[in-house]
Length: 168
Image (cartoon, helix red, strand yellow):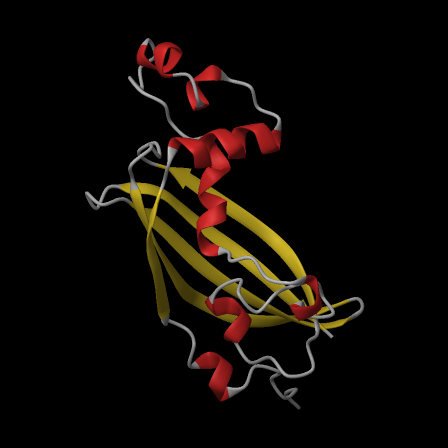
């Protein structure tokens, strides 16, 4: 006898759905603040003279700078019990009743053009799959999404495939 799926038809309807955010303007100050926040003092992130002498030719952003573009700030009291917020992207809208926990299941990242001051970044998120597995502690729902970050010239800056695991 087959077990009943925990993935509702409403959740399945999210497969293929996209959400676009942006454009968001990148400034030298944003890049410098990010570099300082992560403790990376490489001068190509903030020193024009040094950066001009590199193959980039100008200041560029550190590799994982892109992660700031699909999140929005929100008060701690607005977070779910799992620690996830309501402003963290389309995946939070996927209805998985009874699955209150969330675990990051991994991320694959492909880097294209570097992010530069003056770039206007647009982010597209697409739900590409939802499936479930039985774990030692119970059922788990996997939500797979792909993110594409482009600039004002439609150059791909970053592509990312992420897995979110929802647990009971």
